[in-house]
Length: 304
Image (cartoon, rainbow, N blue to C red; front, top):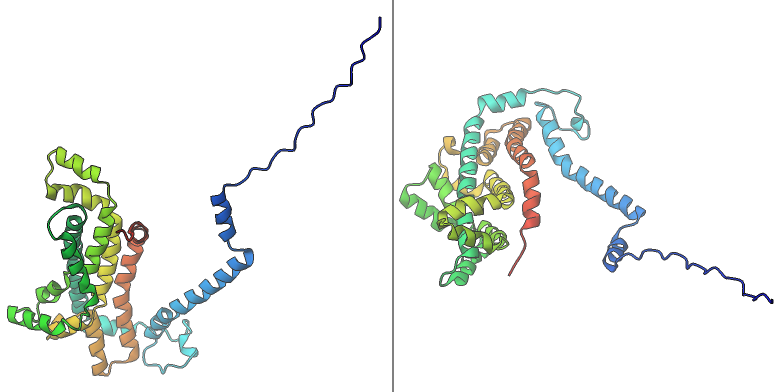
């Protein structure tokens, strides 16, 4: 019996495994990643920019600790020689800087609370309410940004003088409450909130003011913190309006009071010590709200 001759079986040759292909979007992102040399150059430039930005504050603090010395560079900038707190004792004891500090705190904090509350209400109305002339009213109000403050300075001063607001806290605060930029940012942020939240609250019987307090304000914490920092800085560093509205030394703010020291032939170290005292509160305020500032900036978009 003849055996059937079978051809030798051939094992199938397996194809080499294919390399996973990254999605096109990931490949495009990888193409934008800088090289190692680019990262090094970027960090060098950032370090130089950081040093240049930090140097004026360093010089202000060091020179404020060296009263009665002639400024000689770079010897005067060495922090371990001839250090004294005499300038700070003169500022906190001899000058009225504590009163100026209190005026600045009242001016800044009251303005922050009032501006945030009013701009949040206006932003909610412009973003989620329907009424006749809403767009015209909003863009007309926003056009105030293009009007320089110096143009309205004299009419505002005359109005405050006729109302008896000269050399008073309310005369200092009231003209700064209508902030078009704050209303614009609040409106842009609230526009991104889902309408279903407000409709569900209305179905449950909540009124508009309760919706504003219980839904809008809690959801707007990032943008409120961001605006709070900006408004606080604007008012803390404000110089022109407090200079005009305040007539007595007891109503000066820090910026006006420190500027008045130049007319009294006060040493440079004393003026720099006053500047350090004025800088510390806004530096601490930024450290506290830094996280909310970043969230608010990234969460606020320019929407049509």
